[in-house]
Image (cartoon, rainbow, N blue to C red):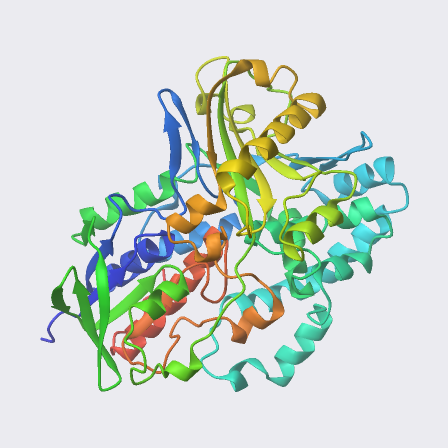
Length: 497
């Protein structure tokens, strides 16, 4: 009988937890190390007294992928409750117009015909075209890794990238279907879900606005941050080891093979290691010039956008407002250029509001609300302190939200907390960006760090900065790919659900 393989997971974010459960299900002895005192990574709660709200992601896309990956990890999909958002969300324009996004195709076309007459035809063309391309895009770019460049640049992939308009930006690709700037905004702002600018994110990400209508927009009852708690409980129940408050100092590599880790000065031997965190943090744990990771090949990356996040406990409820809402200024693209090209805080920002009590009455105390506001900003500011910059920005947004959608908001606030890119950087997020490395062309697909990122046997990675990229189900998908490759290279057969 072969001895049980031992694997270390460095980092307890959603990618690390998913990989740990998948490996555990295949009979691997897993130890997960998390330097904080709790697991979850970006999936965490902000709370004060009776008020609790997600700190990070709130919008659930690709629900079937998420649930299927849970099953791959041996977790019943019944352990979580997904609530459909229908309509999906509202987009509020500065001129007073409001576009409601519906999942159902005919309802969305009817809404466009009412608010932006003539644009409904472009929407139908978009959906019909993407309906043919999306399955191939998911299979080719979201469900495969690319150990070698030639694995990516195949004739079939090149043809698919051309048809998905990878040579254009998402914003330009949207212009191929819609003539009105406001509707182009509505079908390209989804790049912000993964920290990218609509005019810099490749057109292949048209899969995002398509996925909203094909699979819906959802909310996880109890908050997205409850998901890692379920996974932690399951891993402990199945005998996996979780060591919180434990820092990893070094990844041990000898003769091109990862042999384990150094945890707070103590060496621990493992058959393989999976790193779950910012990719740049992984590089720091490898000795410079180490075999398989030459110093001359160390890369620099462009970080994703930063966020100013505002968490509120409010002594009133707006049940008539959607769970997810976007408020756009007079020029949404001016905001994007200010953030992504000039590194400045916009005078007229766009922002997103999460209002969970509109869908789940138990999300806040009776008659009250918890609100989450996200304002895209540069990951860092040169010569300015966030201590000085955040407060005026937040006050402008609160005033604007009160005027355009939440009457009486400021006078009803009972609790408020703000997070800035400075807080994100202190938490170890690369460059103060909130979504890993940016989803620009030269950091996507084969150009993104892969699940086996170096020529080092036994060393793997998962996370928002690793292929296939950001977003909770996508990070879980990447963790699955890394786990499957690890098991294959250890001689263990992958068992599908």
